[in-house]
Image (cartoon, rainbow, N blue to C red; front, top):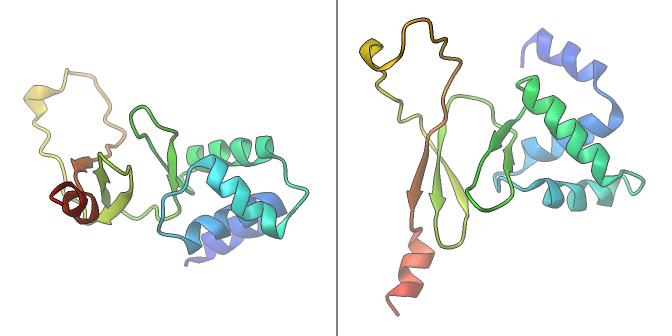
Length: 135
């Protein structure tokens, strides 16, 4: 981590730090409710609204990633390095993968459009669900 990261973390509230630390410690891409249930173990006084508010602030600040899962609650990722995800359409589990990238052609983007970023979520059936289906 760079000095900027250390400085940012020093300015975090205790609640925000515990949420952020939890997200850095897990690869499970939890929902806000799952985050709340886990951080409550270490900070019983934390409110669910505090978790939602801090997740929104951290997403806006680029400290965590919000991953939209159609017809399910958003998931969160503490790993903000460039990477994409596989989403199992059966169990809704998310898996990290390297960046698969997007080939954006200038001709496909209207003139004057500012591209701020993109996210790729590849829809799959994971091995566990595929194995259960074949039985």
